[in-house]
Length: 152
Image (cartoon, rainbow, N blue to C red):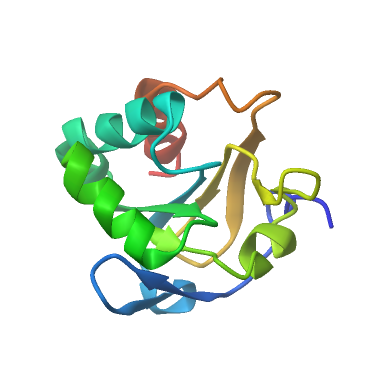
């Protein structure tokens, strides 16, 4: 399945979070959402990316955006990772790989998500997507924030 096309409804999902609660995408209507799929906890690029979200959390909040980092790691692993790296955003576990598959970002060979970004507007529509060519690459927060600010 390919990544959703801009202008189409974002597929809904419910995933467990490091906060101990489930997060359902459709309950976030009225807010912008940044889905940030990442390959694996405890890896260099993922850590840099998630710590960057933590460092610039206030900037994402100013745009009215909820940042939802998603990986296929289990919740206990994500909780340990979040604590070890002092990550401020809650992390979501796609342990069954269903959401990564639905969004077209599951690397079947590695059985983990590709690094990918999906910007969703307040009406639940996909507005921008990007899939990295390699797991060692990531978008800068300035680019992500630019996409979010462009939504108004």
